[in-house]
Image (spheres, rainbow, N blue to C red):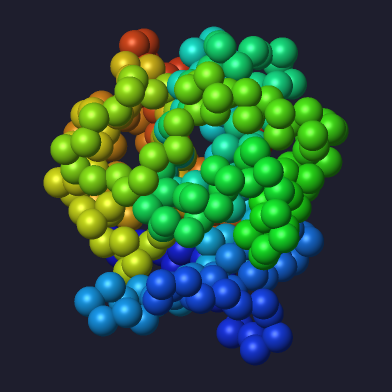
Length: 282
């Protein structure tokens, strides 16, 4: 089974701001719900990457809430500790959505643990700098807009949310790491996994069955939920092999299917009402 198309294609635009750093191009785009995203491509010989947007053109924020925010709701509803692994920091929508949901439940930074991976050095470094000091470049503007959009969505003050995240980072309750590779050690086992890596064309190594088998064995706690925009046979087989139960979950904005799966110490007998509304299969 091949992966479904990962994102609805954005037309290339000569008008969208584009920044190139060490052979990688970043085009700053606005999705249909008004939230920003980035399209990336790389043309360096030996390190080529096709142009791919980080989010569906129908809405970066809307897609992130639908695919990943609802998984945080599931973890909270089950009473699991909030230990969240995010594969693909990117614009950091998923991290801010998770922190916003946890802030809504009056969680302190000490009661959560968040670990993010971002292989791209420009995105990784720029985000860490922005957490402590906003500066005048397209990346800083994007991160500020993202935290503002997420805060507005959840009825929070943007500065309070950013401070909550910065405090978690300073106390090492939020670690931002570099490239995810087979063999590295995680700091803990996770109850929620956001698998938001680029598509199989851009990052085939992260979607191979041997890697996924290793990854789930090392990263997933006994009680764990995983969500991703993609739906592939390799991922489904790896999840089943690791003892996860797949839950039917529609893709975002007309996409036929995404992937949602849980592993629990007791059999899954139900999903929350929000998930039930989202997982109706046409």
